[in-house]
Image 1 (spheres, rainbow, N blue to C red):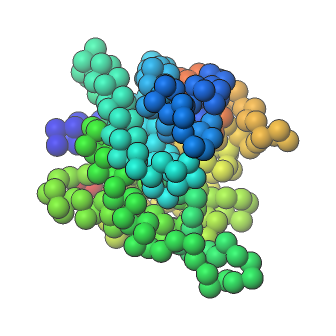
Image 2: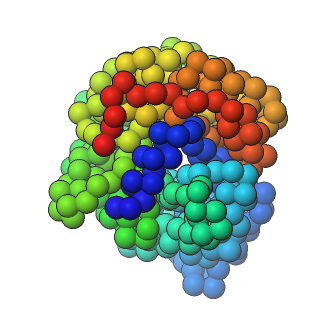
Amino acid sequence: MKNSEQLYKALGERILILDGAMGTMIQRYNFTEEDYRGERFKDWKSPLKGNNDLLSLTQPEAIEEIHRKYLLAGADIIETNTFSGTTIAMADYHMEDLVYELNYESAKIAKKVCDEFTAQNPNKPRFVAGSIGPTNRTASLSPDVNDPGYRAITFDELRIAYKQQAEALLDGGSDILLVETIFDTLNAKAALFAIDEIREERNITIPIMVSGTITDASGRTLSGQTAEAFLISVSHLNLLSVGFNCALGAKQLTPYLETLSHNSDFYISAYPNAGLPNAFGKYDESPEFMAEQIREYAEKRLINIVGGCCGTTPPHIKAIADLVKDYEPRKLKETVI
């Protein structure tokens, strides 16, 4: 894959910029139930408002506009609008049969905009990361406090769902697959197993980004792993990068990135929230304040890829891009190919 070569070359030269929050930007459109439905789903049997992935089919211009704003802000990598794009998550809306189309079309939209920007400036190629979220089920924990041994999902069910999503994302033009916001590493392992199957079946190279989430001050994922244990759990595959996103602000994330950086031979990614949520669930950190927090990552050479999660917008991404352009990327202990 020619794009893989360009990606590794770019990572060797500079810190790459990932985009910011898709959900935060979608909220600004104030879409109604009718907007989510569009003409095609106007008679759908269940409510659809809140199904952001569906907007790739019913409001594709808005999704394209969001991608374009992040690319204008300086993003090298943009994520597809597919965070909930599995049959498991789409079951909430009775839309399991649309999963392939949702992922394929989302990747196509992102690829189209990336290709435009790359054509304008071939020295700054842009890449599509197919977003694979954690689903709303966990393979490690019981949802029933009275039955600790119960599981709402099996490893194999997750593997099958992730494989369908990953295949569609690749078919639509994704350059990278991003397994993100991992709160249960067993779920992530199912996704990685599925991607590895595709890699073997298609005999292709698939750059994989893996991004966990530290849920609170305990420094652990929701299923109880420390940063080091998380790293060890996913290091059996030849990944492009490993890192953390969401749940914490940039400052709170620093010690966990240090753990990854000091113990990993992969590239390191970070895309924190715009601080911690306030009492109303909003994120208050300004672009300038957030970028200043990220300066520590750059000064300590902890990162290769950096962006934003909840509450971040194109101005946040621009401020981060402007800041890190003057810093060297973290050097690998050995070259990843």
